[in-house]
Image (cartoon, rainbow, N blue to C red):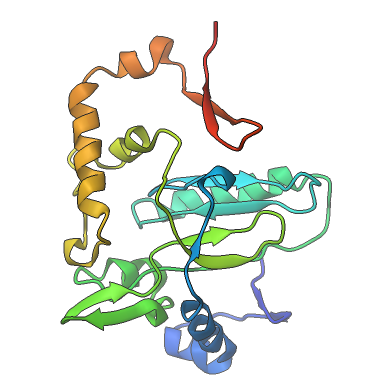
Length: 229
């Protein structure tokens, strides 16, 4: 699959400095994006994508597929083909077209996880606060109808926030790879997730008959669990 920037095909790039030297608009676009104000999204108008998750959908008129993923480097090589497949499967009505890619996030973290994941491409999202490197943009939103991508903050992270969060660190995973750079809500989020695990030690209770939990959007915009009779 060829990669294009401003309708020009990108040849093999060996270093980040070479990429920015040949395509300086990428850095300018990054500066513009990180300077945008945060958008508070109505909780009845979105689906929150947690760490190691992705979601794909189309607007009501089927005009274009959108996929949002939160990759943390745990299995990126196997995740990317799934993202492409999700978008193309929702775009089956069109044989032509292009996939637009937006990379947001990462920073100069102590363990260099972001650099390993993005090869320094996302270094524009780094800021030093009180001697600690932090990301400028912590979260983003995507307008499904327009395709617009914007910095966002979220109070609600549903549906099934604690259940989905618990999946990411069961089996001995760290609670955070960058504890000094986490946002203010992180500690409370982890506490509620751990409490959820303590209250639900048996997965059969959460997934009777080994069946997945299913949710749908109500007419009011809320997420409601589908209970099979």
